[in-house]
Length: 256
Image (tube, rainbow, N blue to C red; front, top):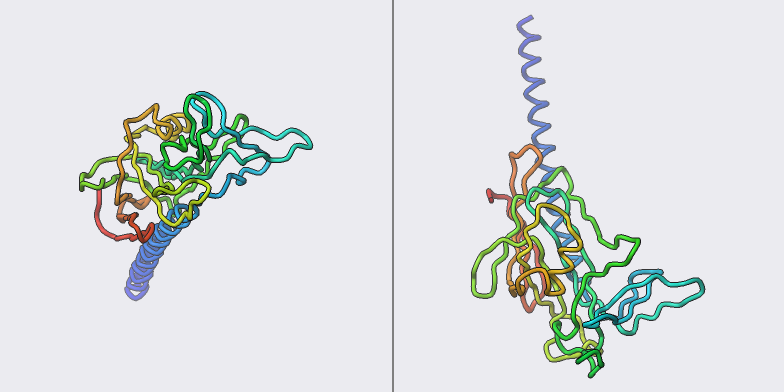
């Protein structure tokens, strides 16, 4: 009986150890997967004319003119020469288990008083907006693995100031080039003072358009503090932006 009791204790202890190791492995893998996804999404930004949304056309319309998606009619072909894919925006809010990824479109041409004046030579001239269309959700919902939860989303601007931000964008740095000649090699990162309680496409869209948030800060670093579902493990995911490109560096350490 004593032998059986000791064996039972060893078995239970072994199972607990195995379970803990499995949870740690799952947590580490989920953080690594997120780092890879953010890096891939940011690096996918290019200045190609917008052909990504199959079944939609894109034209510059409205006042001020912005890249606007519409459904194609039967037998119609896509007409997207007015638009550029200028970036990606990432919505990450505290306590969320998802990161929402938006395609950001811009005008190929710059406009003054509604009249085209030549190719856009800056992000401001491209008049960026999140890609949306009536009757469809074009948002990519990236679900964090292993029950990960976002504890905080913070950014460091170019003067070294740290602040919270629920919306970060990676955009083409036109660098005196125009949308017609962009190489797409260099990105600029911007953070918006979006701190909503949950996912909200319209609020994020207004921020990117410059009507719903303060002017965005140029940033060099975006940090996500992540927590495991059992609250026992934490990781700080650093997403850095420089002339060399976007890099991710997860650190498995305490954060808040």
